[in-house]
Image (cartoon, rainbow, N blue to C red; front, side):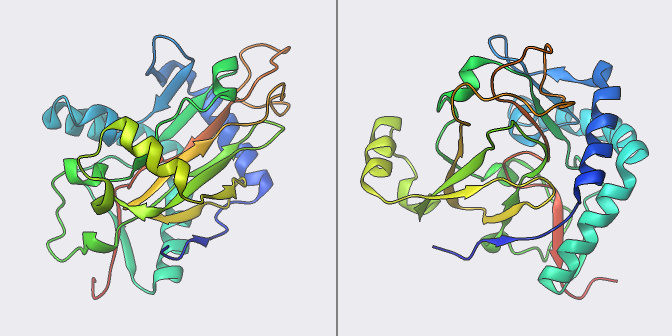
Length: 246
């Protein structure tokens, strides 16, 4: 399997500061599920672009102003960490969404493996302004800001998109059952960087967990189940590292 790197972006105090700001912007959250308390702050390509690329761009440009105004320092830090790791200049695509936030409030369903096994290919839905970008080496990441007390993680299987293209869900589940997976525990402020064509699935927290005190995951003070707040989508993001720029 392709190499997976883990880079430190934010420390614990910085994660708490970001979490508090996200909570303060709750009026701007968009509910994404009728069944579960799943919200986003900012546009998400895999949710917004399939229906209408034009509406996605309109939403992205509108919400980018909000995100940049409150989290500009986070994006600057992230770009610097990426530039140092990849040895290349990093910039955000001006016509696409900045990495936004996924917020999961407490719900028993989040203790179950309800997330799909998938490859992060949402970048194919977008028109990128960088003609020289090499999407054969796309990377995706999720930067955790707040986590349930029992933790969370990402399961990765050693097969890529080209191996499963066109397979039915049942066939994919059978393939996953016969291949050894690797689980990467999620750590606040320190995201794993996953090859964009690798197959992944979020690992649900253990049952009867409690959300961390002060977490945006809490719907009530007696919250007993898993939730979290993350920057980015668990998919390829509009952040491009390309050598020779500027």
